[in-house]
Amino acid sequence: MLVLAFVLAAAGAADAGETLRGRLTSASGRADFEGYTVWIEDAGKLPAVSQESSVRVMSQVNKSFSPAWLAVRAGDKIDFENLDNVFHNVFSLDKRNPFDLGLYKGKRHFAADLKTEIQGGDTTLRAFGAAGKYQIFCNIHPDMVATVVAFDHGYFAQSDKNGVFTLPAPPPGRYTLGVDGPRLREPAKIPIEFAAGAPLLSVSVSPARRAAKVKHTRKDGKDYPSDDDYAPASK
Ligand SMILES: [Cu+2]
Image 1 (cartoon, protein in one colour):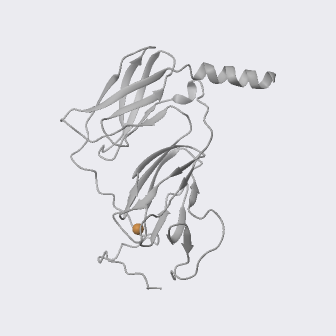
Image 2 (tube, helix red, strand yellow):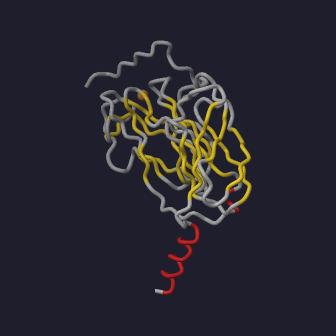
Image 3 (spheres, protein in one colour):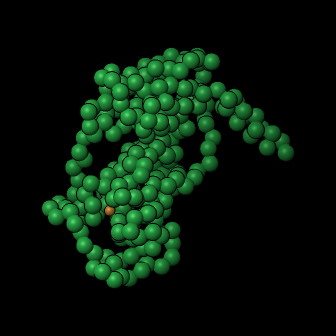
């Protein structure tokens, strides 16, 4: 009982209902900020924000990953569900977390011959245990590109299309906000000052007109065939 009371008190200290709310703005006019990632630098020094690890979902729909940019807590798992009627693959060559989920439709998982169904296991789930930014691809469709950003703290959020984001409130003080997103050529680092009860913070960044094209190979390190129309053997 004593232990439980302590845990509740600690959680209360880190979450007094205070938040740090802000809005990303573009120096060059209107911009779509859906899914931009915002975080507090050096958040390891701040009071811990507790959060149970969870399963997040990244769908494959209309030959795209959705959401194409996903921020998770390190330790979370992502369920790569395929909602299309065609086969997709999910792979990453990142040395910190290389994986290949094979070919599948829906929850069914297939060997490379597209006929042999692989039984058992959470085959569309993948854990992201270490903090970092990961790029993820489909071995069939070269335009399918996703970014997963895993954080080893709770001081991160993703903005809505208007750029509005809500972070857990740190103690009052000066901080550096990190911002990253599809049309930023590199993460922005923006000094801020936070006070309890502060109004919506305005954070100006400079997104490019369009997202940079991510150059990447297939999982075997070779280029994709120029013909995008991959036709799996019909069953
Ligand atoms: Cu695909």
